[in-house]
Length: 80
Length: 425
Image (cartoon, rainbow over the protein chains, first blue to last red):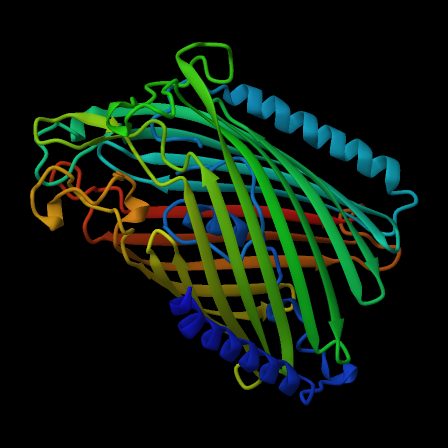
């Protein structure tokens, strides 16, 4: 337990501090609504759930040992 | 599961009937609500995954259909159907470079179909939304129930968006009827899925629980630059191996059911950025993802893509991706040798290539055409907008330490085609 406290807690605190600083700096970055024409375009969207992307991620999930960044899926592994 | 070793029990016509039924139901639902709905949409997609091989090729057809309606400004209701129609051949026994088992010719043909049905809702209030969904999936040898909820909000004049999500899965997988007290080295693999989820005494149903957590932070920094960071974690508990796969665990050729740990904790952090280059009139995206789990796999993913309008109604995307991972702590290509490189790795054994050290390269492209209607002038007399997307990807995997009886597998090149149509009413 001591080992955990010595090594993990400072790392977690550092991560929290870094994330807080990043979030705080985000408040300084203001893009006004009239400046959003490009950001609103579909080519600039992160969450565009194109069918081909979903099919690709489905295939990759079944061909690689890692996963993450996605939502919950049902139905088993699909295609191994 | 849709395992490589599942026998030919699938009924493609059954899946087609199910798909037809769902499509008909969605059409009726859309027709019934479109008169008062502000927006309704329907998506129909088909993907084809092909992994050519002389002995163990794989083909997966993945049709899906989704419909969504907005009965009011704040509510969206969604339902869908998806299938994986799988056929091919696979080796039922994994042995490594010291094995004298004729693994290559042991490849058995299989076919199966996974059917998954989902439904959900989204409630939107001002700058906040709440989404809930449920998915039920069924195969001959696998059942799954998954619930998911997510909530998101934006602030700082909509420049910052935070989304939290949680999902819980309750799955069941069919195995042979071994007892928990049986030595893992005496457990047998399934040779087919007959009798699964019945009172057959030779079959057993084992639980798998899945918990998924995710936090996403999207930030716009300038009128042409935005970033997204995603942290995700997953906990898995239960039977996490392949019930059909045996592994050679003794130099005399003794085989036993693949034996994986029952718990796995997984974590990933992904960071992506999007930048629009005005001079090139192109949106560029770059991303990196780091992954780590308690089975000691460390994965790295790097992606690049670029997308631009070739015509006002046609945009084209090209993408490239590199992935690499280390092996699981208990991975060995062969468990029968005396040295660490080809010997036992503790109490577990695996024949899963996804747990071996590997890297992969992917290149792909997508074309997407969109036609927008005008007030009083719908596309094809029906749609407010209509779009079609066609994509192709090529994935090449380099298995650094995986062999089948000392031979490198030849099914390491995969081709993926996808066609999707979307209409908004």
